[in-house]
View (tube, rainbow, N blue to C red):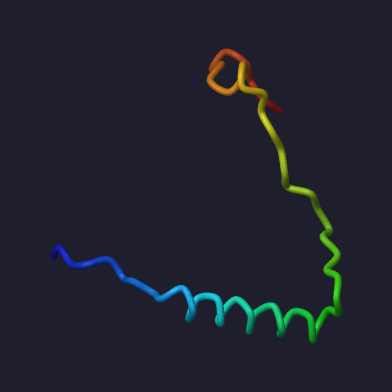
Length: 55
């Protein structure tokens, strides 16, 4: 069954994000503490090196 992808107007999406942020701010205050930093970066020259096993 082929159908058109769901399209959401940006103003509605922006409003939904704003409501979510307002809720978080009401519950947690103006800052949010992150318990873990899940960001990591692989240098470009190592990105496709399949012989290098990352731990």
